[in-house]
Length: 338
Image (cartoon, rainbow, N blue to C red; front, side, top):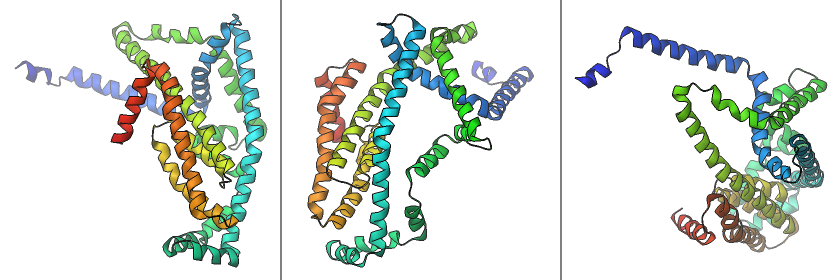
């Protein structure tokens, strides 16, 4: 009887449900309408969340918050520019070489003859058919690192890209980036005050909402930041290994596999493009295909050993509080199961 009474929809209850649904729909609509304005703030908020641990670390040496913020941001900007200055020309050269290699495979009769003799017929036929497709030819013809970065930015952050480039001029794009920078500085300067959002939650819901957010933040800081560090180091190791063996697009592929590493064991997907690039490299240089494939496989094995034996036990063990031996045991078990 009580269960039936609880499920009874009175007029008052229906009105409350409709009002709640209307409020939610209104919030969703206004969020979408203001997305161009809210996206810079959301990006700055995410950057502030990721940057704050560094600032807290700097504050141990420089107690003044504002000084710590500007020192940290300056260090991040310099490191980013240096990283780009070193990597972008190398990646651009790799992309140009890759375009030339694919073009040679399409047009060079000698290379095509060598490939037909050294590759399984089905594999060579599939490569030849795909390389001859008009969209592949156009892509190779226009292969350019800046176009690739532009395409990635448009796909990953369409709203932010519209803010930067859109119908506005380049000057307005710089203004958009400046707005994000200002948001970031203000959020970092008053980061502790921003965390006072908990007082804005109605008392009836405060405990449950704050508890959920705290648990989520704890999980994010313990897993996401630790896994991001592991993925970043693995990406650099893959890029270095592929670069040393001369793999086409080795640096770009290595960094991409590092991103895949944000989800444990997903980097295995990188075996497919690494194998294809190894075959292309062997065909171009006349090297033994199996030796080049073996070297590419060796890079995967070495990086995986470094990741499982050193990086994960040290980094993830520290953030999760597990003993490194227990971390290695769990990795072995899950590796076997997966």
